[in-house]
Length: 335
Image (cartoon, one colour):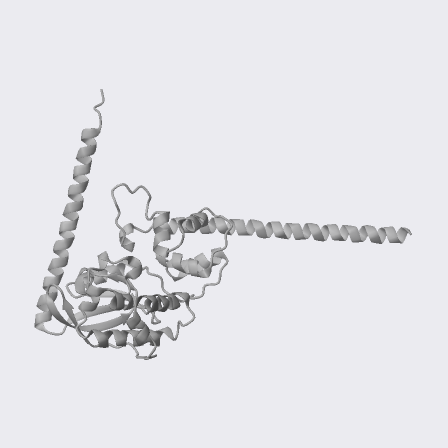
């Protein structure tokens, strides 16, 4: 009888110990998850605050107090609900999909290391761990400017425009007037009237673009961003649907391209692609004049871009001066 009591006591003690161990483990996991959410919140805030509105094509405005971007601006750029993004920055216990994290990474211009850190903190598997986000080094941006008056841009393999100089901005349409999420050469070639009208041999050009896109997509066929681009184009353009259904493929190559620029005329340009990394991710795409007439017209186009930039800066300065004077007049004198 005594032996049975001991056995029962021992079993109860073992059960209690196991329960206590499980509770401790659960508490530890909960604490670890809470810490990770806090780190994620701090990381998102730090990345958001380092980006200027101009870097992502937004207008700064006169009453901006937040350093960098606002939360609602990140939500807008990543097409994520403001509430969900706010909860992320507050360290709330919510589940976020890999697609949402991918969109946020691109909106915040994260490089590969930062992107990997974001997914690790969120406890998610990155569906495209080697993908490039939209950030480019300042040195590359400076190179784009130094290439003027020759048009130049940085483009990834999905035809997204990551950066461009003044001449390229006006080459086919005013890219600064295009929404950031629409700054994709394939999208513009099928949906933007001004861009399409600049293509001298439009039918052949868009057919080749779709074929190049399909060829490169073979390496990214399961990635959400690529599938989303195709779906968006199919919904927006019957012409794209018809061409896409042909399953044509062609590898990218450099050649003479002819554009009809609305203000300076026909431009014959030799395009050159320079990959910016060891893998075919983003590339520096430059356009050099193929003849003397094109060179002269590029110089005129560059002059137009500089004149527009100066006019915009002057208008902004005058507006700020007027507002300051109005504020001073409205402020009662101190006695």
